[in-house]
Length: 155
Image (tube, rainbow, N blue to C red; front, top):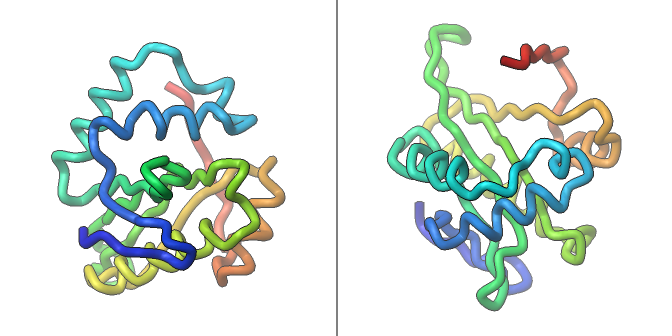
């Protein structure tokens, strides 16, 4: 991934191992994530190593003045459907509360679409919890369509 300077001087770049605590802080600052995340750093370090080692996954951070203010993961999924299309899946989108409403999330999702096109994907998809009504409006405003009903099975 090439680093990219977003509007407002925020740098979008590949996450590094030293960013993991800041990423976890963004995940736990979220009302839904607070109940899902753990204080143990070991699983996050292992997950980061696996994501970082796999070229199909790209964990990025938005950095402003040396502080991580946003994050997301972009994963590329080859498949046979849609004529063998490559899909891009966006996961774990978070923007620091103090930075919301200023276009950072919008810029990050635009970058996802551009990166997906660059890599040959024909579709960008994401899921969001049904309770995140503000996020639903945000994604719809970017052109995402709520076209499917999702199901999960906790293991």
